[in-house]
Image 1 (cartoon, helix red, strand yellow):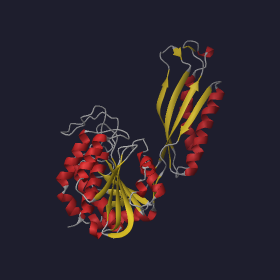
Image 2 (cartoon, helix red, strand yellow):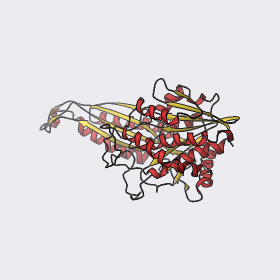
Image 3 (tube, helix red, strand yellow):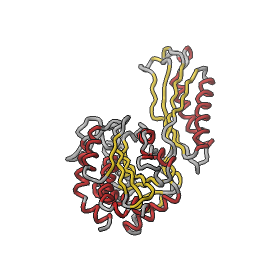
Image 4 (cartoon, helix red, strand yellow):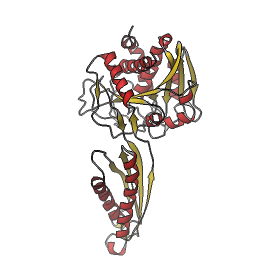
Length: 395
């Protein structure tokens, strides 16, 4: 029986697990309910299972029937602090928390792959490490698991690592996409506090207005990006938070704003940090104000190994036939902490379209939306590709 046939036989079981995970989403590094459900889903399989110390991770090692290298498969498990707005029989039961990014599908597909590969373990010339990871959404869960030894779980570092991510729009359901080289951006945080001198709104000349200067900074940062960076090595700076003042007729002492900064190269990541600070300090000085600026380094660029990305595409073609995989023409501005794994191990990160078939992928709510919906029908295909990647790599 092929992986696709075996995965389709598991379809109902996979859907039940995904719905169970969706009803109890957990945020951050500590996911006790999720961990318990993953352990139950793996129970009875010939796996060496360990759990994390600093986080609710699960690492499971499948020993192949013959000696050989190790391959790592990763699925993230955490949810988002988002209040779900969907009409589903399995809607989130935890207020303010939701699997809005599809990690419940990733966890389910990886558990399915563990079952598929366990049934064919004698065919494997090597070992498979199943990495069930908390804390992808801004908590560096992958880095924590690396520190706790996930890359040494099989006794030797993996020769390849593969991750997958569903999208609720952009791609039709069941379509896989990836590319060699950068596939997701580095994501950093730029924080600014503009310090002025408060006063009466009717007499701005007697105060030092931090709001006006802060607004000028926000506009100038956009101009700086377009006049400093090559559009073919893109940089995005988006101010998503601006706070200042308490009344319409009061000039406050200070204003604060934060921006997300996305880059695809080490050179631009270094340069944009310097230029952001220069722009803010220059505008502050021009207005006689003072600005405090800090740059918090987030997830690095997610970079696919060219050979492994090609291997993933060929494996998908062999598994599902031509037309189910395409090479993405450009990377995605989102970020991923699987980037930490790919800094240590060559591998590939693959997207899977999970837009419900009754919605238009061009207009459906995207990941992180409180109205994001994901098609259960892709669960067997995701589990089959996970399993096929490890099986083919170790054959």
